[in-house]
Image (cartoon, rainbow, N blue to C red; front, side):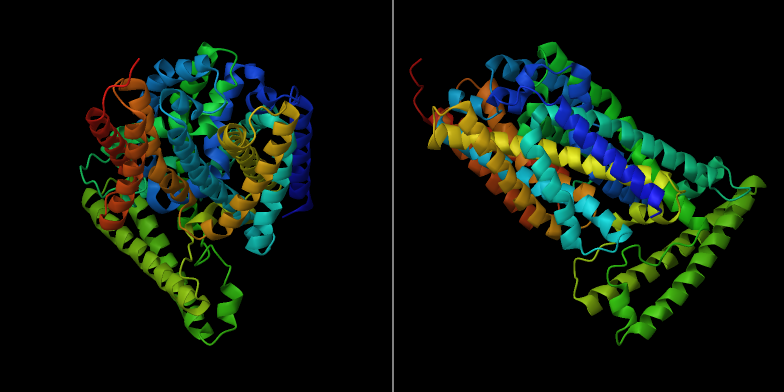
Length: 563
């Protein structure tokens, strides 16, 4: 990158860290450190809720998803508004008035300590893995921009962020979230503007979207009832409701956000902000990926965006084969560009029959490009031994570092850094809260001073930061990062949601019913994942139903407890 871009990145990060720490206050008490004294305004909490979700994965993974698969992923969020309304009426006032630090404290009051411990443990495992994915996203960016080793880049992100979280507290984390949302939205809008202005002469936005539609990138609604299909209207609306209820209602990283609000109404407003703005924002980011796809219809892209093994292959025994694939790719790209030109010409001339023929030719040219890319990826896997090699997460980082003007590149890299840091900080703070409140204070050393608990909280933050950074080295090659983080959550959220349904909605539910129901839910999700092709978005439904069914069955077999 240009020195001006590096100056923008360095200046922004310095300002974010300084201002975040400056705003931190009342962190000498455990409630101030984890809940900001329940004093934050609703709009700041609302932006923090959205920022904790988004992270650098939104810029790296979602844009890559839009490039490779189009707009279909937005259906994943169709259940979000419904879930937010349900939570605003039920769990937000419930948790806020209960004066709990973590969502799982209530489970002991309602059931027993083993149910609380198991639920909190499931959160710690799921969120610890998810933070690793969040760290891996900016590590991917830096590995491309600087040519650094992925291990070093993961450490470069994870270690400073862990240190910042240890001393900042949740109040500093929240105000950093506010800033990163502004930078992310501004950066994405700037990138969309550049992509539209950068269309070739004679190619309007309508032409570009027509091409995207012909390539299947604008398909947004799919009413298929196929449970094996991940992104459909029904999976997003029904499975998505369960997923979002589990995430926002039972995941401490989100519950902790609205517990910092000034009042119940403020907590509700913070969730409704996400309900109204998340889908349009997600659609905008997916559209950015689609526009990058259009850009590369007219500007030849690299055969593979992930150049991690490029030098190894070019210097190896199969270098000639690789160069031959590059020649084939160049020819396939030229054929694709010519097919796109013919398709646009037929559209402008009103040639209906010609448009149909050119659409078929364009689809065939797309397939040739995809086939060459697939052959190149297979060659990389064979030569390098990297069977998890993936390309989708590298699309947008490659674009912003090679085609954006000076200054804007720095802004978007700063957005990725800021998104990563604030999301990681929020997650680590929540992991620390669950560790200290649900385990250390409850089981190991009850009755200690706030000063002691704060010290232990910082140590637990360090532990989770190290754990997540190590997992990040593995997560970077798991595929589309936005899918990976949702897949990790899908294993756990249904079971957690089910136990809270038992706790709040089923008065007859017993402690043993809740505990064994929770174990049954996790077990059944594992069996479904291992033995069927059902999309992961339905795992939350499976887990919830299993926990409630088993929990109620066991509860009905037990005598009614004395009241």
